[in-house]
Image (cartoon, rainbow, N blue to C red; front, side, top):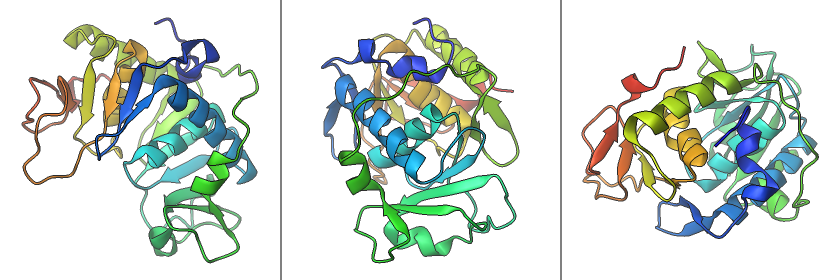
Length: 245
């Protein structure tokens, strides 16, 4: 697929009923749901002050965490998965998306917003991600994102749309990833290489993002798996093979 930035992978023309995501329970979500709900996530996060150039922390590895990342991306912001709890000194940190029960574990800079998912938050200053996303506008303004715009950071390195897409194309070509192929994420999303190989490469090939079950003895859930360790799937995409700067 010819995409200059990651938002090109979530356009209206690409919505259809093919499976795009499988969650921990085995529930399947199609590309129509994935694209539309990513737009709704972006619209909602805009209300929490997310905008171009800021950092959004995302805690968790379920569908809502993935949607928070995609929504952040559409707003030309960068995502930091599993950020540290002490963020008070990070002036570019704008919002934290996390399970409601974990929000108080984080020390945020002044003005940063807390966005909780799962249980309904009791605190009036906490945005409820679940409820907000489902009631948001299911469309998104036209975008023109510069390929040099930052999309992911791990606190030490920050990578752009252009860099992530180039690395994702390398993954697709190296393993022969095709439409409909299931790619299981078995490495931490806090590593930008995991997101690149497990999420972006899957979207690029119109494959299926499969979230892990967390079982101590994992069973096979797809054709490929992203991991630095042995996996039950037939083909492993090693993080060391993902060519990010």
